[in-house]
Length: 205
Image (cartoon, rainbow, N blue to C red; front, side, top):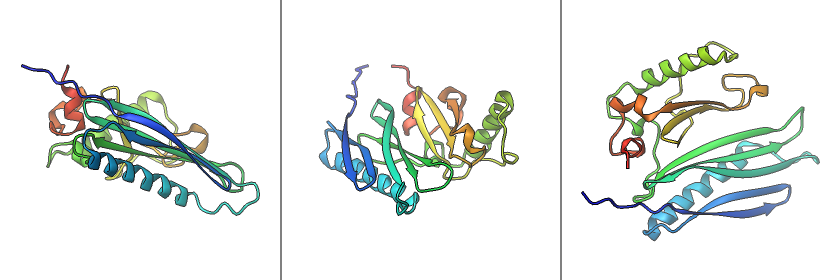
């Protein structure tokens, strides 16, 4: 059986500056299909600008904003990354937002959480159970009892794991930061969509 190596994408950090704003945006290069590459870059730029709008007004004289990114997976034709945006708009402290995107580098498709799993599988129930167990084992202090993830819960893929995470204030106090729950793909193997990004991670090559 022939093995084909999937060349990672090239991620070029690009700096954008506006009054009170400095952003570092990932620009994807080296994808064989130029249209796919353009689709991915357009999606990244659109989400980066959504984060800016979500932070609200920078009218306060002390206001400032800084954006950056982290690449979580760039292998096997899967690109998963997180965009971050910190803004101080007045008040006691600033706020950092995070948004993650997961792409198929062959097609440009951006995956939602439900698309990582087989149609009809009760993936939410499985993830809720695993996360609840991690909350208990790690002694995480919640703002209120954990009632499960949202259908559009934030996630990324890293180190052959699905990482579910929660925004600041979503389940814990600000001081605890983002809450991350890594789940091995092997723990989800029976419900994973084999044609999706997690299915690719199950293959040991």
